[in-house]
Structures are given as C-alpha cells and as structure tokens.
Image (cartoon, rainbow, N blue to C red; front, side, top):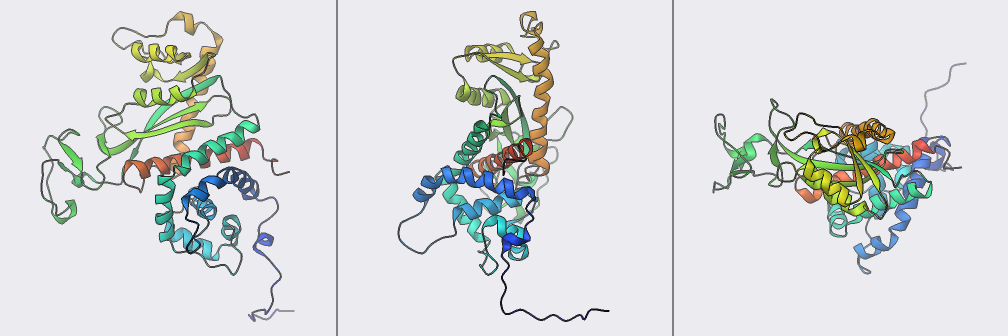
Length: 360
C-alpha cells in the first residue's frame, strides 16, 4: 500500500537531541574527554566575565563549537553557526536543545579576545595533556622536535617598504614589485606585519609565513609543547630551545630530530639541558657532524630516528584538517592561539583513538 506524502507538524515532541546521536558515535567519547578538560578550567572561565550584567554565551559551548569547526574542516564561523542551527549532531555536541537559539557568528570574535587576554587556550592544551597522562599515554623520557611553516593571510602586494608613508592600503593601487630587492629588514606586510617573507627550500618561492615548532613524545606521538613565531627572525633551533627548557628535568632524556638540528652549538645546548641528541647526522656540514659513535652505536639512536619521523603526521594533520595550511587569522597572538587549539584537538583525537572504550 502506498504511503501518503503528507507533512503535518506534531503539537508535542518527546524526542531530544541526544536521541538523534547513536550510542556508538565517536563524538560521544570525544565530548566526555573535552568536558573533563573544560571542567578543570572552570575557575579561569569565572575570571573572564563580570558578576553583573547580561549573561553571555557559555565559553564551553563556544569552545565545543570551535572544535567542530576543526574536526569537520568548516571554512568559516558564519557557516559553522548555520550548520549548528539545523544539524542535530552539532547541536548535541555544543550543548543546545531543539528549541535553543543559536548565537550570532560575531560572538566568536568577541570571545576570542577574552581567550587571548586570559590565556585560556594554553591552559586547555595543558588540561588535555593531563587527561592523557592520567591514562598513562605519555612518555617522560623520549621526545622528538621539528618545525614547519604555515602561510600567512597576506599577499605579496601587501609586502611594501617600511618607509612608505602611503596609507591608502595595498589594495588601492597596483604595484609592480618584480625585479625589486625585498627583505624583512626593509619591507613589511601592511595587512599582517607579524608575518615574514620566507622560503622552505632553495629554489622554491618565498611567501609571507609563520614558523611553528612542535615537541612530541615518542610513545604515542602527543604534542607536548608548541610555539609559533615569525618565520625568518626566529629559527627552528631557537624556538625549540625555549620549548625544551620547559620540559627539562633531573634525569636524562633523548631528543630525536632531522639533520637540520645537527650543529655543535645546538647539540651542546641540548646536553646542558640533559637531552641526549639523537639527530640524523649531517656529514655534509662544514666541520662534520656533532654526533659521533658514542651516541650512534646504541640501539636507542636508531629507534629515535625511526620514531621522530612520526612528528610529520602532526604537521600534516593540523594543515590538512586543522585549517593551518594557510591560516585565516592575522597577528602573531591570534595565529598562535589557532595553532595551539588545532594541536589540542589533535591530542584529543589521539586519546580517543588509543583508548576507544574510555567512555565505558
């Protein structure tokens, strides 16, 4: 018997948004992990807002929504709000019921300022790492270090001489920069002054970029430290030393890396901080490799060289899925916050994938 195509709204509905999400959906365990980390930041959230006035959107909901944007590679916050409006899965994950109104997309911009002022995202990053440490997923003895570059949200036309007093903006006039000698000392971007002109390798084009440095542990490849800096003025080795100083301890640790870190000055600095350098030997460098047979003869050296390649997976994920291949924020503080949040989401996924039955 053919059914009739009749749409008649019901007066009463007893179904909630939770009923639309399957019990085995991966976002269920992911939300439990995120909520456990957010609970630790409850005191920080209280300091962000005044005790009087109109209630704002809960910061926990905004952070959950931003996590959805990273997970599902939603290109803008305007589109994110639109999808939360009609997607039951997104409504449940954020914490909205069927009849709850969705906030305006500009709320993310206002809340982002508060998060930067109170350094909430680094606290969230540390809270997620504590969740991993509780489950014995982190190593305190073996690490890897590496860096990458991400393209800034600025064009070559915005890279103009610093002594140029024309305030009309780079888009108001066409300018032929071919054949002109340009450097970070004489030029800067009008749209993003913190971005610097840099190229990845010889023979490749130069672009306005930021530099990102990661330190990962070698057991399950969690990112334990991250730093964002201008691409040219701060090298990978300089940025990584700042990160290593935060995790150095009393006992010896191993540190894997590519041959770019195989310099005498950097190796000596690592040994002072009680890190045994397990870097790939750069025998073509002037003066030879700083790593000799006293290190390379041990089996742990070969293990570190093999394990340190997994750090490339973190860079690939945050660029491909975390939206960092060309970041849509300007200014070092906002770019650093976006990188920290994307890495935090990556660590959450690592916990969920390594312990899929954590929810039980």
